[in-house]
Image (cartoon, rainbow, N blue to C red; front, side, top):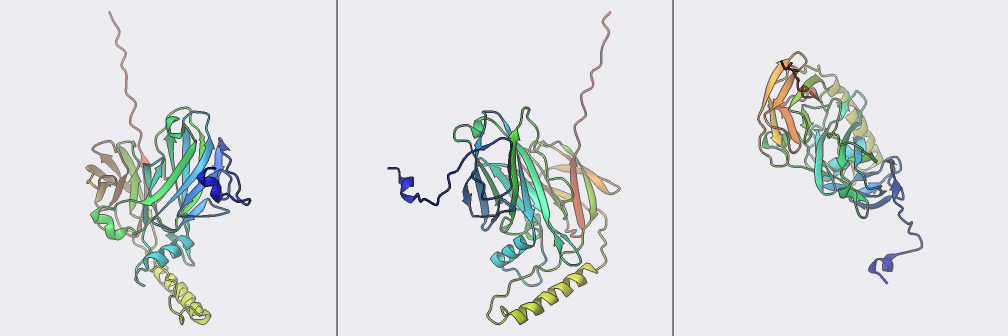
Length: 327
């Protein structure tokens, strides 16, 4: 008898591999075989409760390359879990999260998430990252392992990005489909909600940076920790105070200002990345000196918390061929 069968019970459900295309949106799907520091969910795959989180899915692949899309979510509950874990000061504002996306043990990209603040609350943020896996990477047992983990911050951004960034984040969904032709890493698209953005590995050298306004984030809500503040009357007072504080912060005039200098750092090595910035109305054009081999974090040299960035790759111009008439 194998060792694993000693722990088998009649209540265990067998894990069956999923056929392609796979749309995984719940943690109780039979194809989910392993969760490491992830709490299963019904409307989502799961929520991370540690410094990293991993989901292993059994996939029935026909021996061809696949395209994987991972949707990451940041909501109010994620902020609560992070606050309970880190215990920041009561005046510390909510700051962006930076996480790396790994698959089959390799970093495929990174994402920055920041919630857009409103009068009554903050809207949930979502980032979708899509990448290719070769047939050899899923060959054999067909086990797809996707991880979210914190990645090193450059010194100039250390105090502007959340420590333990993965705590509370959600695996909203994982999509897997056949990929007949190789494609570059895509996403996340749209505004990041902060003055940071990520250039994915293998992306183009030129990117268009568009800026928009973002409301100032209020201090993070902290769960009461002693027996007096845990009582319902005290919690009701705290809730009203938080609502009033949010309205006061939201009412502050929002002056995003102009885009300042931009810095870049390779998130794998921590080395600075050489780039040039051409300022234009509503943003800038950023040119990297070398093709990125790993995820590159771009951020403003000085904090601009009321700016939101959107980074769009600019395709390289197609080579021009000139026909020469032979005499």
